[in-house]
Length: 310
Image 1 (cartoon, rainbow, N blue to C red):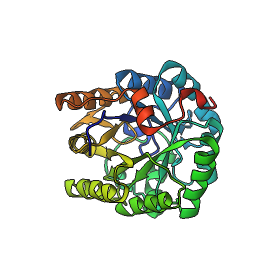
Image 2 (cartoon, rainbow, N blue to C red; image 1 turned 90 degrees about the vertical axis):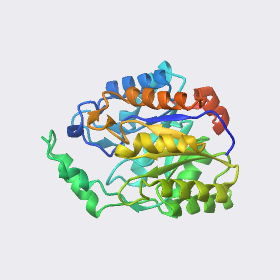
Image 3 (cartoon, rainbow, N blue to C red; image 1 turned 120 degrees about the vertical axis):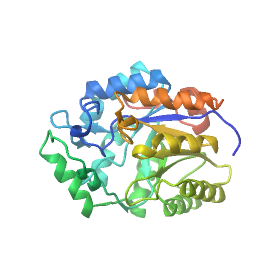
């Protein structure tokens, strides 16, 4: 894979962690906006965004919840704004598309298949729970399948991609997801350049081992040749080691409190910007050039900051 500037994505809050797990997890629109802006100032070129109910912190698909922070982030940064279509447990595809279809962003995430998505092991750590919904949300993942069928993916590609000019962060949690993506490329519902986010360490997906990282990279190269940009996301304690390993192999990287609450062993990250600064330091120490937002837009052929609906 030829050398190119490394795109740093920061995933600000997500739908994996619950408020009781860290006091630093942003929940309100004000906190999500300020965390996103600080992450961009620290060097993130792409900001991956979910919304939460400001009263109890549960993941929310409500477009109004997104629009409470999207305009402020756009005003204050040049970063690419990337809205989830993954949402959270018990959201339908229609729920998950509402905010993105209204916002028409430059980029959205797109999970490339249905999968088991196990969060319930997080219940093993004793803690004081702030909200009644949290334990049920985590335990419910034991019998939960995240649903993105071929029909669902086709709908998202057509309504958002063709309908809104939005490009995608294709989230691939296992090797089969890469083949699903190749299927849609063959059908010309996906067009290069392709931005592939390989995700390691989620229970239900591929493991966080170096062999897995290498295999996913080799499979993507075999399927997509030079038509893709590869990024690495390691869940939990695997965040920084796998991002570093990926960057050494030519990948882009993703960090943020959606993916890990920690900065180091036993040390909670106090902000998303802390994680961005840490990965920047690592990339700089490896003499790797870091992409600015305008470079990320050019590499991914995005429609531009002023072509969105917020």
